[in-house]
Image 1 (cartoon, rainbow, N blue to C red):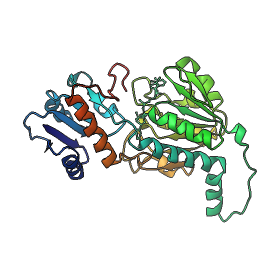
Image 2 (image 1 turned 60 degrees about the horizontal axis):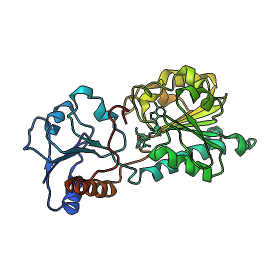
Image 3 (image 1 turned 45 degrees about the vertical axis):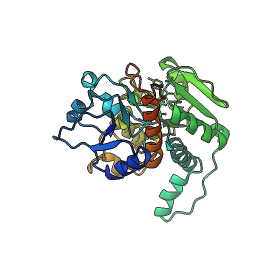
Length: 309
Ligand SMILES: NC(=O)c1ccc[n+]([C@@H]2O[C@H](COP(=O)([O-])OP(=O)(O)OC[C@H]3O[C@@H](n4cnc5c(N)ncnc54)[C@H](OP(=O)(O)O)[C@@H]3O)[C@@H](O)[C@H]2O)c1
């Protein structure tokens, strides 16, 4: 069995070593731009280039080294007609819950304001917020969003969630579909996005939608940057309608040096680290799925091309 391995960042050696351990019967083939390789049975990839697509036509399945599928699905009609399998959780949901809990607690306990005060040498206790009024709204109740919603619930926050199809999560007020979005947003104090990037979610959070949030609300985006109309967010922060944002993802990454977000103290920036792929766990999961496919069985986490995630 031959497995093509490729990562856009070039850091592929450790993956090849882990696959050699997990599937000793398989030969790992490291693809490089401009170097066609012999036919492979499977491909395990991240951040593909157009030239890679040709190599993927004959594989039995393409495995992604992450949960987001937009970087592959953007090739549209040029995609090979083979199943695409995303990573299922593999330790990412726990990391997302940690990141979201940190951001929500920081805003709830007003640590962002205390940080700014401290930099100016100001000692000024602020009035505490009321937890029952500090509702967290989670966009997307999939593998990651559902766990984030659960974790915030456990911290005692009122939690609401929004998804495409109806959900029933204990303790979470669930909203479904575009027609419920405005209602969902109007009662959300901290908005956390865990939506996939699709044509429907691209620019979803524009001026009109973000304005539906109550005055003084916060945004935490850990999904994909293109879901947010960045100039609209900045304008709403400057006007005070949005009190602050914690952003892990951006329309262009790395966030370019002259981007105005860098100079806005109410925006907290992290470099796309909210949930990192844990390599050993990912390799174990992909190797298990390859063995299932080899036995003619089905696997979880196959991407639905019509839905776009
Ligand atoms: N920043 C990072 O480090 C990082 C790491 C991993 C993942 N991510 C991002 O997180 C995203 C979510 O991951 P996941 O594993 O939780 O995905 P998932 O299991 O596929 O869940 C996606 C959720 O979004 C909902 N959704 C999709 N389109 C929608 C629409 N148009 N309207 C309303 N709801 C919609 C889905 O609704 P249904 O349940 O009704 O289908 C589902 O609940 C990934 O796509 C990726 O972009 C970021």
